[in-house]
Structures are given as structure tokens and as C-alpha cells.
Image 1: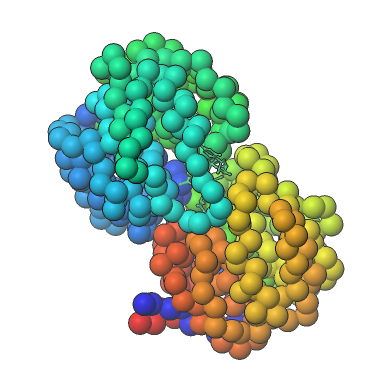
Image 2 (image 1 turned 90 degrees about the horizontal axis):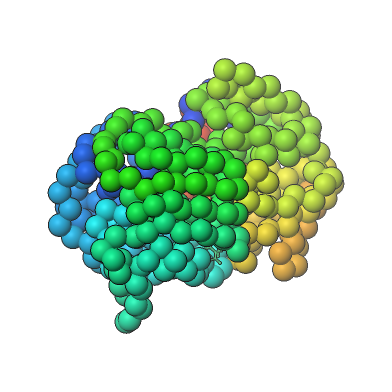
Length: 420
Ligand code: EPZ
């Protein structure tokens, strides 16, 4: 099992180009199934989750190759619509292939997906929406057998109880080739949904309203392949900026998506960091001290503060002057990183969905285990700021979302090695 060995105490400093977005690339890879042609995705991050998506595509009969941040997918021939449980378990996004396969073939067999353990992650909204679109769904022995009653899904008027990112994506994927019009009310407004819709429009789909809470899709059956550049990863961006703030450093994040990162940047700025933006670059300079954030940091669907940035910002605030309070509103169990931060000397008290972070002067190195993707990244941020050496195990969690993280940190002058 590989580990990261991090020697803390160095201020991060330098320029880093932002990787492409994992959470955008995954649904777009699933969407290539709908085109029945060749698609080229540039700016695709080299991550274990992306390789899992490639394995699913190849299993269905597509030809997916990956080289130098470019994924090429030829989806002319589909021969398999049943995804094995083992592939489904590799990541949460495997469930997105349900909408894409239904859109392309009118049938699929999937199972409950894997992914980070952040509390219960049901797929009831996905299934209810598919049923309204004319899909007959039977669950037996852990398998979910889906078939369009009329051979093809049909449009529907849908209202989501919560703006779920995955459910919105699955509906879009099923609806772009369905018969008639689909209206999704209370749709997720995350930037990655817009990137998916932009990709699909380039393939010939008729979609409007993405980025707002009502999305309208008119089904078509003449989609084709295209070339698309994956948007930058706003959460990886938030992570590297948080690491730099934690070490009281200074950095330029290039290839950044500034407006998409605004909900995070506006909170980070309250710590006293200077932030300047322009021409896809974000410049951050942290003073010698960080201030606690006085307003409660509430995670919310976009354009609220992103749940995926909660852990990494918490690592930076662990050594701020004063007390910051987080409220996690998206997932029931997204404070699993706090035990490791406490082991490193942080003063964090978790009370249900609230975490109270009382800043301490300094963290110290420790031996810790990554609990999930963003929680693991928070441990890296804390380790870089801490006195002494930290060893992080279960780094497979971190590799799911950060492309060569040790090289990125090294580029900023941090000491981080992969061992084993
Ligand atoms: C996506 O997960 C992201 N994953 C997550 O990023 C992100 O944290 C999350 O959206 C919220 O922004 C990908 O894009 C691959 P949801 P998703 O459906 O789609 C409940 C990361 O670190 N819910 O918006 O799974 C659910 O339990 C990952 O990169 C239902 O109850 O999130 C959760 O409490 C982690 N029933 C809430 O909604 C459903 O049918 C939000 O989930 C669906 C969801």
C-alpha cells in the first residue's frame, strides 16, 4: 500500500496550472455513449476514477483510449448494456452510465454504485425520474434491471426534491435522446452540469436552462461526436489555494475557472488572504496569520459554498486566529477527516452537522489514514502546514481526484513523497 510522506513547515510558493475537472469529465465520458461516433475530450485529468469510466466504456463495446490528458471514445458499436457489479463499485459516477445507456439503447442493468463513504447516498431520485420517463425498473439480488417500456424513454415533467447533481445528470443523459420534451425543475446548477450540457449541445442535443434551476431538453435522435475541452477543476483549485493559505504562502493558480470558484473565493478572502483574479488566473497571498471566518460556513448546492471544499478549508482554518464554524448540509457523514486533524493537534468539535474549529498556533506531524477523497486532501494541507513529518496511508482515496498531487505540491515547493 502506498503512502505519502510529508515534511511540513515550508511556505508554498509558485505557479500551478489547474487540472481538468473530475466531476465534469466523468458524466461527459458517460455521455459519449449517446453520440454513436467519435469524441475527443481534451484536458481530461489522469485519475483512477477516469480510468474506471474508461473501463466501463470499453466493457460496453466502445473503444476508449487515454493519452496525455486526452480521452478518445468511439461509441459506434455498443454490444453490452449490463455493467458488472465490480465495475459499478469502483466509483459513485458509475450510476451515470444508467441514463446514458438508457438514452442510447433503452435498456441497462446496473447496481448500487461505490464511491466515497459520506453517509447514505441513495439513488431514489434517479430511479423515480427514470420511471417517470417510461423506464420499467426491477430491483433483484442487488441488480437494477431497467428497460424502456416502449423501447425508448419519453420526455416528462420532473421536480426534484433536492437539486441532486447525479440525478440531474442522469435525467439529462436519458432525455437528450428520448421522445419529446423533458422539463427538470429544481435541477442542480453546478458548473459541471453546464459543461455536460455544453458537450451535448456540441453533439447536436437541444438543451436550455442549464446553470438555472429549470432545464428543458428536447429529445433528438441524430447526435454525433465532437471535440470538447473539459472545464478546470474548481475543487482541486480550492484545495491548492487552501494548502497555500495553510502554509501562509503565495501562489498563482493558472487555467482557473474564476466565476465558478467565486463561492469558495469569497469565503477564503475572509481569512485575510489577498486574492486577485484575471485572465483565468487566481493570485493568492496569505499574510503571516490567518483570521477565523466569522460567518458560519454553510455547505449548500451551487452557488453556495461547495461541500467538496469544506474539509480542505477546515485544514487551513485549524491554525487561524479565532473560532470558525462549519455546517455541513449536503452529506450526513462528511467530517471523517476531523479525527486525523485532531491527532495532528487541531481543536475541532463535531456536533451533528456542525463542526467548531478553534484555531491553534501550530499543528504537528502524525501518522494518519485518508478517510475519503477530500478528507485525505485536507490531511495533506494540514501536513504541509504542520511542524514535523506526517505519513498518510490509504492514499488511493486521494488519487481518485488529484492528478499527481505530490508533483503539484512539489512544484509549489512543498516536500511530499510517495512511498511504497
Ligand atoms: C456529486 O455527487 C459529486 N460527485 C460529489 O463530489 C459532490 O460532493 C456532490 O455532487 C455534491 O456537490 C460527482 O460529481 C462524481 P448529489 P452526487 O446527488 O451526484 C442526496 C467529490 O469529492 N441524494 O448532489 O452523488 C445524497 O444522499 C464528490 O468529488 C438522495 O437522497 O451528489 C446527498 O445527501 C464527493 N437521493 C445529496 O442528495 C438521490 O437519489 C447530494 O447528492 C440522490 C442524492
